[in-house]
Length: 224
Image 1 (cartoon, rainbow, N blue to C red):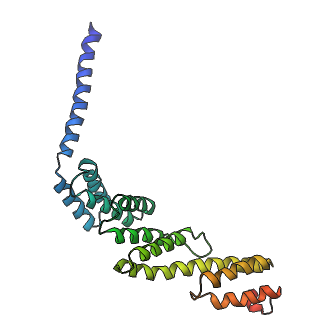
Image 2 (image 1 turned 180 degrees about the horizontal axis):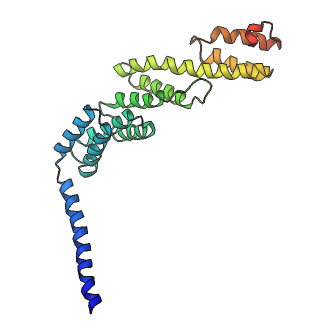
């Protein structure tokens, strides 16, 4: 009998605990959509991007059919971008574009996808996957929205992408050249002049091409 008496308060306390959690959760969800969007915008404008993510995330989850839901989706992507969480930002921007392909923010969204990749561009001796993806995204933006202001911004970034890609090919070409693998080096230098002309490596690539074709470097300055 004593065991039963002791168990009753424990069961009652457990029930009250879960009821209290449910009540407080409901209290949070009682925030109207307008309040959440206001909190999100204020946090975002203040640079508190994590708080903005929380507010816009709640808005998106609790009020998916609200007139503010599209704004929340976009601001979630923007907050990830400013937090330098680029994979998360790309995923959020791509989801926005997929769900709202005709939205007026589409050029901005494509531009931001490109910027996410652009911000991850590494030095020319490293993998250039980010530069390639940024280039492809910016070119897509210019094809789809050639007269949009964001397309004009993208054109400026394209030059940097091309410079990195050309520099990478040139760097590998020089490596092969120093190893006396002239055929492999020639292929890289030809890629530079054909795919990436006029971005700063053209003339040097031509010099190396001449040296590769002769199979002997005639200028010690080229070989170094």
